[in-house]
Length: 311
Image 1: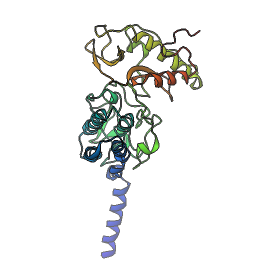
Image 2: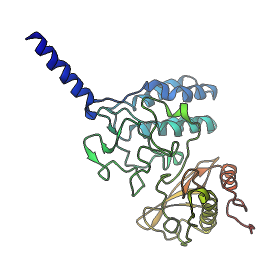
Image 3: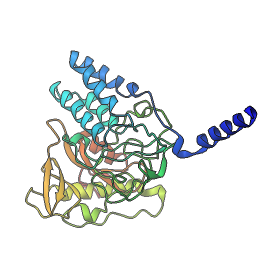
Image 4: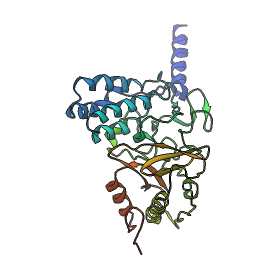
């Protein structure tokens, strides 16, 4: 009788372990802000750094709300801005906001559905862990339902589980994004689903269509130049297509009800269209002028930010 009971217990345990809904995907959450706290201390943040870091990594727990992580990243950037706009702290906060959160059920974790306070976080959302079910989100919500598409996007993330800092897909279970990349991949649109060029700017200019995956980089560079040239003529009162992004007089702009809502990029950054690196398309984001020009030049496009003077 005892042997039968033991067999039933073992079978039940194996069955529960095989069920994807019984698996918890977690991480060492404190590792996510170690580099940011070090950068904060180096920048002179003193005793302010640790409380902000601890509050931030606590938002990666499964019980946290969908916008708690973004709110924490906003506070990380708020402190960075009091420390001479420390660029390293801002970069690490941008990476932190894309760190996957713990999943209690091996399902994808919902995305925040509100805009960040700081423009440096525009277009950024968390990656998922590789063990998360890409088709079902916590609560049994299927892709397309509430919270399954990041704020500002109108299509599911592609590839599923990716984020701007890791556009190739989800990251290994339990790993830290900051240990994988130091490039936050800042962008106003998802790397896999860029808004069509004709819908971002007021003047409609078609983005060159690459003939194959091998030549989209140059097309991306030229498309970014076309957008930047169009953005140069926009003003806060320009008409626009709702739910699209643009740059207006150096600020990141979101079109809401056919009118631009501007968010400042801060004292050291400006808004620009950038070519995507790993897939066809462009993104609209806050960056430095030198970084924007370098990203465009790396595609082989000539003529700088807007292509002016290029053949």
